[in-house]
Image 1 (cartoon, one colour):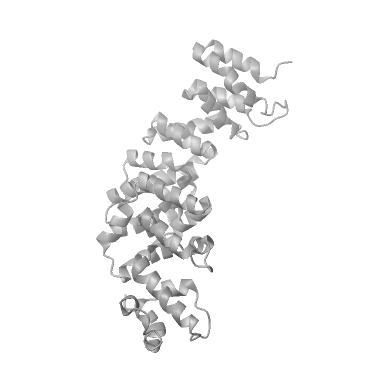
Image 2: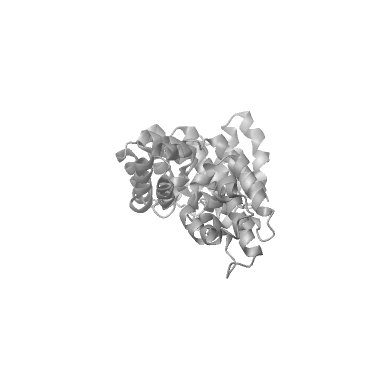
Length: 339
C-alpha cells in the first residue's frame, strides 16, 4: 500500500505546474519518515506543508521543511496570523522565508506575548519597518530575548557608544549578536576600559564600524583555522568584541608568538582573547623578556602567569618588575625595557 502522503501529493500536483510535478520525487522520500499514525493529535507535516503552499505560496521543499519543525501545531491559523503580522510589519516574502529557514518554529510562538512586543520596542526606539525586517530576518532568535532585560537596554547601550539610532541600525545589520548579549556585563566594561586607556569615542566607534560582513567572515575563518570552536568564537565576541577590529595579520602574529613558548597553548588565547589586542612589540615581547630574565636569575618568589603579565597596567608592571631590579636587568636592552 502506498504511504498515506502520496495521494495528497498527487492531488496537489494536479493543480500545480509541471515543474512542481517533477519536484515531487526529489523530496517525497524524506516524507516517509513523518509519522502517519491515525491517532496523531497534531497536524501532520504534509497537511501543514499543503496549507503553506496553497495559502502562502511557499516553495514546496521549503514548505515541507518548515512544516516538519511544527508537527505539534494543531491549528494552522496560528501560523497564518504570525505570517500576516510579519507582512503587515514590513516583511517581504523573502524576509519571511529567510527568517523561517533559520527559525521555523517562529510560527509556533505567541504572537501577542512574544512577537508583537519586540516589534513595538523597535518602533518606539526609532527603527524603520524595513530596518526591523532586515535585522530580524537574518537573526530571528532576537525575538526570543526579553524586551526589558535585553533588547531595549542593549539598543540604548549601543546608542550611547555609537551616538545615534541610524548607527546602531548599521551595526545590527552587520551583526545582531549585540542584542543577544548582556552588554552591561560584556561589552560596556570593555568600552570603559578602552576609554580609560585614552582611546577616544570616535576611535571606539571606528572599531565597530569596521565590522563589515566581509571583515567578520575573515575573522571567523581565521579563528576557526587557529583552533577556535564556534562557541569559542561567540564567547570571544561576547567578552572582547574589540578583537574583531584587530587585523588578521596582528591576530596571527600574536598567536604565533605566544605559541612559540613551551608553556602556552591555543587554549590560553581562547580563554584570554584580550591578549590579541595587545601590542606585540610594545607590550608582550618586552614584558616577557623582563619576566624571563628575572625568572632565569631566580629573583621571583613565584611564577608569574602570562595573563598577569599582559593585563597589568604599565605603571604597576614597572613598579613591580622593573624598578626593583634595574641592576639585574642591566643586560636587557633599555629600549625594550622602557617600551
